[in-house]
Image (cartoon, rainbow, N blue to C red; front, side, top):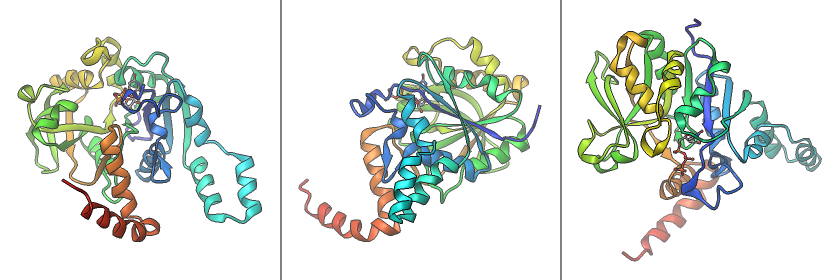
Length: 298
Ligand code: UTP
């Protein structure tokens, strides 16, 4: 088994029901965040962490994703003719980022099922999983720390973030113990979307994972859980419960900037936050936003 993490799986085959009708003909991972689709931020994050073999698990509406990372000769020629080098560079950037492979999920039976589809491509080595609706600010790197911990502990690594106690039922929640590193905890149990009163903590699983190939064997027999879907969290719970299988599960606690684009209100907040920080947009947006907020009635 190769010990270094080289490959990343990006499941993008969900139905995106919370964003209908926008996601009727387009995967939610293609929704623009300022001027790039969410998925491009995720691929850039993978590349920044040294991962350039990307497998996207796609569902219906697959063409938009594949086209985005493909060359569009007609558009490139048009921009070249106009001398629009900035946009040309941006368009070419998406297709030159990484080696991107696509695989159909078939029926969207859940995140665990989407990850299981990657088995043959991944083979017998550790790999990352990144969810396209969780954006991690490039200024607060998380994945490289997770890959480092995977190498050190030879275990499964998940990303955890403290959320308001009443919000935990939207996430997977972790029961944890401290380790010698204040940023890393040992995970002793995981529950998918618990009721607030049943949550073991307010540490939520966010969309970055570094997994060992043993997870595939577990996913093969994982029964549908919450929402009738094959849940990755349920497979990880099995790995957390028995360290003998694959060295247990550890969590890296993330305290940086994260933007949740899977929920409509959070998606709008993400766009505003990212846009005001941009040099080309912030100057115009900030004063407008201040005026707008000042004029809001309670
Ligand atoms: P979500 O539950 O957030 O995605 O899955 P969803 O099902 O598209 O969202 P809603 O609730 O209907 O709005 C988390 C991630 O797992 C992928 C999704 O694309 C998303 O990135 N996923 C989920 C799959 O690839 N396949 C599935 O069967 C389910």
